[in-house]
Length: 359
Image (cartoon, rainbow, N blue to C red; front, side, top):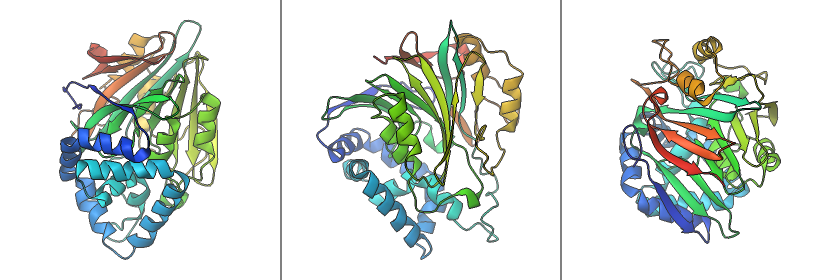
């Protein structure tokens, strides 16, 4: 299911009585994809698993488990169900879900935490947001590691209270560390914003749990509360959309309960993998994409998709085709049509995989 060139269907898990039941249903349905991802994911195999067997990892993993299962017990139960349903070791499921919270603490060759592994890119995802009289859209490239190609799927689920959500999901991870929407008309896309290590709070709330919580937001204000209230380990950038109120806001978060909110307007707002508003020490890894976006005029769906398909910069293109990072798909949220459209391949070619109605 999913990935470049594959058909992306929606698995409807139906009404799930508990978090464990939802995780179990998803784990069973996508067992082969989850097992395949765990076998092929070199970050898991070569970094996370070796580190997890060391004495240094134990207190970090224990703190992450305590913080996240304590605040979000239903979502922790989803992880347990996903592991049981797919037959994958629970440790593997935990490690891929806490990947961004663990990787900064893995000692690098030479012992310097600050240095990145050779060839370890962490620039992923680009967004352009516009809310004008004629257009209200968010267009998003979902970029990920090559190991994720063919290892993504869409999950729809209905909770006991009747709320339903649809979420693009990485195999073995909580829905959704990418993008999704719910029956309240709240939608979101996400961009990672890798800070320097001294900006990270070890063992605190993980981003996959915050974005899973977002899928249950009642409205855009509730969504902002769910983003800004937990004490997170690593920051993130959230693009929140309200299909009922025709609003889009970008919220940047960082450890220490720091956040900044930017309301999208008629001037196109481009966000990649750098903080634009919060003052956080960071790796300016997406400056090339920011600079390229500033050269492009965006005033419509078509020009937004054209920007996200741009490959003018050979080394740091907005649309990525490897060798390590790939644009897994592109999604366009139209608040006037109240649709989420997913594109395969370069979005400027307009090759639609799926159109989802948000309300």
